Length: 319
Ligand SMILES: C[S@@+](CC[C@H](N)C(=O)[O-])C[C@H]1O[C@@H](n2cnc3c(N)ncnc32)[C@H](O)[C@@H]1O
Image (cartoon, rainbow, N blue to C red; front, top):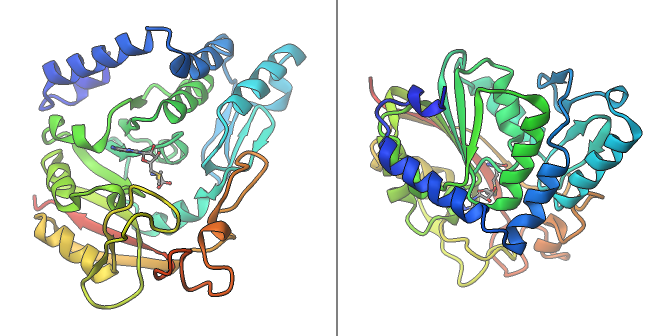
């Protein structure tokens, strides 16, 4: 059964047309696509006998499950998907230490995690699916990941072809397509996305239309310290990252959520970012947090802006 059948209010015609367009593009044999598609296909015959999504490390398959030849193929495919931004993973015994210690973010979410059992969930900007696997441990009916970048999309597809979780789906779609999924989701995760939107309120309003009455939104965002409801708008880059628009304080994020029509808005956690949590590893060999921050004044970014904090919020759609 296609998962869209679990989303009766979604605009099936438009979603199917978009997905077909993406599928046709993937089939064109372009270099940029085939780079990842061929890695995916090289390990398509492999299925894991076991997985474990209950702990900090997402584990799929055991080292004892593969022949030497298949182990080499899996290792090569995993290296082809570098740089790994989110993790950690253990894939058939291969330890993948990603740039981000994503388990820390998940552990901060856990105290506020609604009961996911039997729920329809969206993970917007799901990257390689690290959090989707962690969600799968809580027995949702379906998790749909929205991820427009090929590298992450194919990484997830490959990991899930090993794990075979039929209630996890990822599409090459973005938050800008969420409005096509009218009243579809019980729980939406929006982590690491809002400050990349030039219109954060519009994004939140559209997300609201995709949620069922009584639905819960969990937001995690980069932010700046302070108690006033203001957002930083960097001239070009923030912490060296282009495409960063509004970086809010906690109070500002709470106001965005309220003014976008959400109820019961709460900021439930915030913390200073650090190079313990985001760093260069063997699986991500480029610049990382310590390169983004002023080496003499760690409260400032390289551009002289306040160094980032991370803010966690929860909000509801009235029933
Ligand atoms: C900063 S990462 C956050 C990943 C993950 N949600 C987390 O919190 O660790 C942003 C993710 O959003 C994806 N992304 C980029 N453009 C997007 C869009 N228009 N809609 C949804 N996701 C997008 C990126 O490819 C990336 O995986």
